[in-house]
Amino acid sequence: MKVFVIIPAFNEEARIGQVLTELSDLPYNVVIVDDASTDQTSRAASQFKVTVLRHRINRDQGASLQTGNQYALSQGAEVIVHFDADGQFLVSEIKDIIGPIINNDYDVVFGSRFLAKKSEMPWLKKHFVFPIARLVNWLFFRIKFTDPQSGFRAMSRRAAQKIIIEQDGKAHCSEILSKVFSLKLKAKEVPMTVIYHHFGQNIGGGWKIVKDLLFSKLIK
Image (tube, helix red, strand yellow):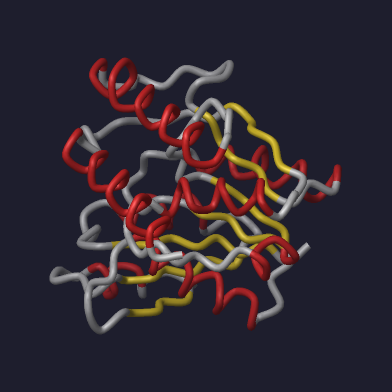
């Protein structure tokens, strides 16, 4: 099947080369969405056989993923994978994410840090940030998935056509989960590994996600 890997990138010049080196031997179509980086992210990515799209202004991760989705669909993508540019996810686990879509007709598959595999997650994130995020997902959307903010996911062409990402920022994770359930798409979680180079989403960022979700609820 025609698999596209979408990688949003903002100032990832230092790390993106390693990710693309690992992807270069695999039969995937790789799309980098440079979100108006101020470093040489686009130049570093252009050294590889990938497609580089670039936002003129910084629009954040959700908007970058939607840009990537639209491009991949226009190129005939049958499966779309969302992946990070900073080396947190393992390229070797992409096959685990796309497997249920290719072999078992799932629409969307999410990687979870809370299943069998281990991820060296910061204590505060594991015991405070994520429990609050799971509670928010339950209160807003009645979603009980184990990982409330997984950025490693795959979706079928049909799912990508139905799921339009409207949250430009980090709240897109909860938005995608919500739309998967509201559209009654066939979805599951699979174990994934995460390598933490830095803390990632902090408490302030977590509250911003909540505010973005509340605002989107109020205006609809």
